[in-house]
Image (cartoon, rainbow, N blue to C red):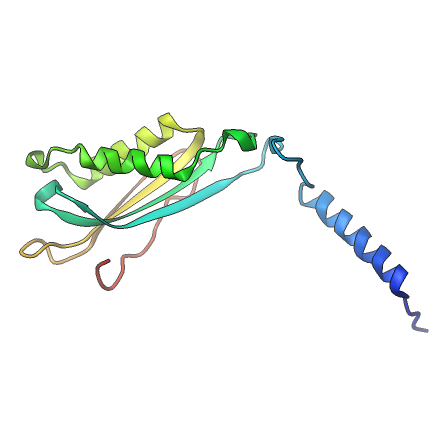
Length: 160
């Protein structure tokens, strides 16, 4: 025998499912309340086609994936634009005459961001596009600090 649930019964079932889903998924947190310990909260952004003077001048794609400190409160979340500005400021301060290796630059940017912001883990990937007369391939380097999967974004077929 099939029994129909009327409109009020359907509403009650949906409400119960919503509450159950909220409880099993960690529930709703009031604004400003820190997430429970053990939760992982990641953020990612990219910067495409950034011009740098290093090694004769190159275009870069930069990717940043980071995990916030465990239990971080909403009010303590950094604006990603601050991390972006710190990374680009580092790139702008490189003396082009030194020809610093991309691996060192990526490591230094990643280390600086990990130390300066409320992140417990970060992975930074830099793609370097060829210049006229330079090596004919896109190069990529990834530096990772902490417990987060290292970025592995494939290089594009064409430049930015």
